[in-house]
Image (cartoon, rainbow, N blue to C red):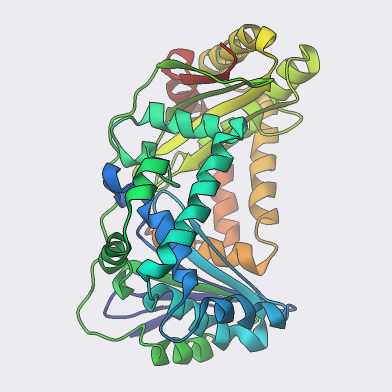
Length: 417
């Protein structure tokens, strides 16, 4: 194994089998955040198996070779710690936040979840019902559902458009053998990133993980390849009738993957466009026109593509007016870009978000994992801030022209007919 020091208190160990461990010591805290990221999620699913990654994430908590479901729930919680997991487009993550003394125990429990789940047929029926209730919850929450529908419309033939939760039909058809197959295909050591931050000792954690078998094998276990970007459907308009008191509308388009030099420019534009109370959309749509309580812009980056867009919830009677006003703001940004004052403000806002986002062990842990998952070299915080400062007006204008053009936006409207 090879261990390198990336920065003060920050170390990375790479094993021959492809498993990577990153740790960062944070002086002055008595807790530690530890996570395991598996490069297998909804982007790797076939449409008939949609939701299998998310259901697998649930099922590992139903028992492992060494622990019952109750033991998994109790062992860290009774010590004041917490255990959590989530499934995204590109990866599945299992995380613990514990007192520093309990870090070895957290490593053992997370290892059990990722590498030793039982995945029994007898546990599938009740847990599948839990996931079906989660799906029902989205169906009953229009400001969540509209995003599901938008992704489906933007990527109609690609896994980025699949529901991470799956549908009632696909989840209802999944078997224990499907979960076991998904686990075999994705949950191998070379497909995993382990990251920790807080009051951690790299060598101590390395010893625990080595005892748990994470670094066995001399042959590199190649991670699953990222899903290809797929063709996005731009400029589509879709209306879904629902008996709701508001019309929920998402405007959005595909952008570029995380590992793209323009990502800071896009983040600055999103902040200026709809990133807070000072943004164009908030000031125009809410303050000037009074058309909405909630209106904001967002962006997401995946391994092969990205997405940016706008959400608004408004009265059905004002939905057309709100749509026209938002498209006008898209048009103005694409045509004229940001003013010098907006550029300065957006730059300061993004730098502040980056710095404030690194104030906890969990956020530091997530940053380390993201770098490894995206194949990015580590850069100190000062270097990141310099890169944000280096974003020029020409780049901002080019990104605005390409990705904020109103004709590029796919629009999904959910609400009364």
